[in-house]
Length: 106
Image 1 (cartoon, helix red, strand yellow):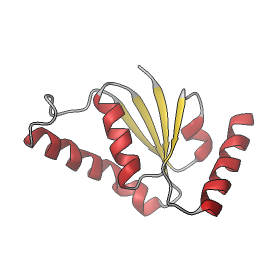
Image 2 (cartoon, rainbow, N blue to C red; image 1 turned 90 degrees about the horizontal axis):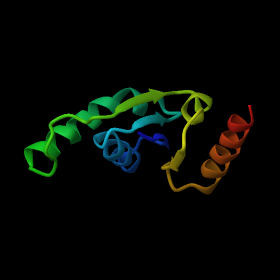
Image 3 (cartoon, helix red, strand yellow; image 1 turned 30 degrees about the horizontal axis):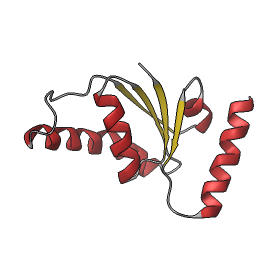
Image 4 (tube, rainbow, N blue to C red; image 1 turned 90 degrees about the vertical axis):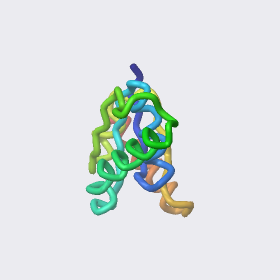
């Protein structure tokens, strides 16, 4: 089991989180948009159901755990990998990476 943080819960972030959770890993999803974060689990379960119905996965449930967090410090704490999946805006990306570095130093 690997502990992973996914920063951003748009389409790409949720697909990455779901893939790792399917194989039994612990995934922490962070997003500063609480509306997106609140709907993340519902969207992941929808993907999960669709993949199973299409015959693309063998088990109807992911083996791992997904945690949706609104504090960056909590999302990156004690993880082995961090995936940055935020909108393609360099200022937002730089701000997030700087915040992540501060969170990791704490």
